[in-house]
Image 1 (tube, protein in one colour):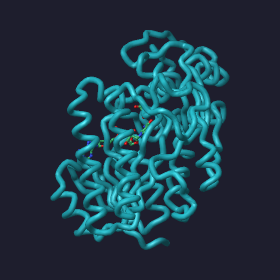
Image 2 (cartoon, rainbow, N blue to C red; image 1 turned 45 degrees about the vertical axis):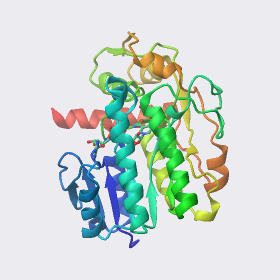
Image 3 (cartoon, helix red, strand yellow; image 1 turned 90 degrees about the vertical axis):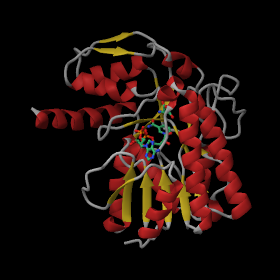
Length: 317
Ligand code: NAD
Ligand code: SER
């Protein structure tokens, strides 16, 4: 078992909850510290309440647990960010600076900071969007991720801090609920389907977005963090791709198992955000540098999502 001591900030979120469990299988569980603004139930390891805006509190935790790696997941996502842009900017950037600074000062071994397809805007190629593309995002979330990527690269080049990053597409998983993004519909839709409820989608039927199933997202994260440093040519953030689909296509996939599933569409402010994002991503740099290869496609993800959610809802009855 690996000896590093890991701090996960934002461990109560959609990705953090699943990543914490995965890291506790690779590292000693009591060396994986799950931290969040809100209290987490201490399942298989230590937890801390932490506001990542509080640099002194972060430093205390890093010292207390002799942390060697930080996974900084806490952020305000695309849709929530648009409701209060300056608040979202403040949280996303100030928390990142606190993480980068403590990591530099205490010479931590590695830092992980996720970016997003939200870094792209309408000027970027819509299909097969390349790794190095014009970045003019249209949300405060996207602006904060572009800035964050550049700060990650700066800390790597200027201070040698080993910061690694992935531009996640929309993440779909059954284990946790999403936290206020534009791709959230792709999780919600499965919950409605297994409960035999009709779903009103906030995006139009033909909106195509890049998506990634949670097991692939977690594996990508662990593989990137394990890759030899000298294999990594991208120090801003790697494009990462798997599947791309529309609400109409995910509906058709669900109907292969639940033919009676009904959907309607009522696009809201999130439609404009989705329209500014790519439909598909070129992730050849990730494939070449550290061997990235997704395992799930839309139909295999749908079968797995429905199987797990049916058990979850049955157990709640
Ligand atoms: P989420 O909203 O589900 O979870 C974020 C967590 O951070 C929450 O538990 C929240 O309580 C915590 N948090 C917020 N402010 C905090 C603070 N000041 N201090 C400590 N904790 C704080 O987000 P997620 O979907 O799990 O995303 C995790 C990361 O991955 C984010 O950086 C996000 O931008 C990125 N990402 C996610 C997706 C996706 O589809 N989920 C896609 C692209 C990128
Ligand atoms: N899933 C995220 C969002 O919709 C993408 O970063 O905000």
